[in-house]
Length: 371
Image 1 (cartoon, rainbow, N blue to C red):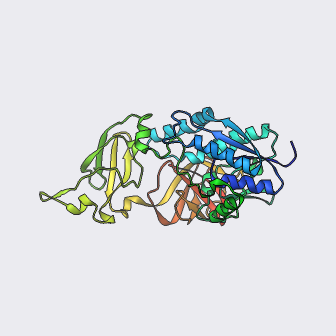
Image 2: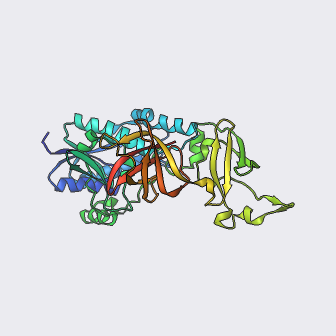
Image 3: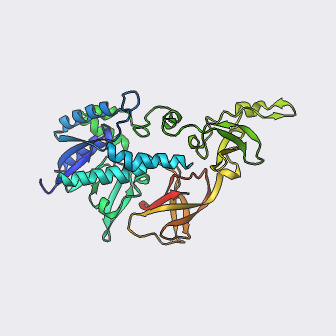
């Protein structure tokens, strides 16, 4: 193959389609690759892979590129889904998109692309990469509302050195306009949400097929009062409000109607903790209950993009969940296995299993898993 061969991960969406189109315009020899990562119950009701493949072939035909279909279902089950289930069983709330990127899209996919003779891979992620001072940096995308660097924080130097992100400096609306102008029928296609093996199905229903219900008590954290019952701690996450099915409390023999109806934000119940040993789910009332607000977290499974940790006691920003705002923080008690991160402002519902990702301006430094 030529020196400028790039394999583009095509998902069937507008982002990856435009990424392939832009690289073709830049003179790259582009090969599209469609990854099939899930097979257990691949029905059109919940997983759109059949339609996605049709869309990929249509896009490739318009752009004028070849497409290969590769099945990574075995790798996905072993490297991503097994970890996903183990984390939920332990009472944590994992982010499978982070694991999928590091283990499938930038490992199994990257290895396969190199075997095809490519010099680079590319995806439709909203993120950037640049070489600076002899190292590769992962950057936030220009479109801050779509930035996906959070999900890519586990990438290393070898992976970034072979990766292109053609959408780094584009806004989503521009991407759709480019697709429309080129006659790509996916120009207005709705963005996919979540992950394929769950799709649009009820999450609890899906999880119960792999992790059987284990009923226990729901108690009020403040005084231990029993408020109801849960079907299993793995079905709940810190900060969860819906699906608790806690009725109104009785005061002096009369039901408190405001609590029953959730008459205001401060009357709602939120998950605040889990006792895995006693199988108790603890809840508090009020969005801003002190139990839901913390300044410090501990993170493990650390992954630093530069290959070494940032210096401690230096002001960075961090996101303890994807949709969180960047908040000023410092790294404390850093060693090879774990670190403590102290935030300038209290963070709401810090959730074990989720990732905390650190930044220095637009540069993503890496991060770890909240414990």
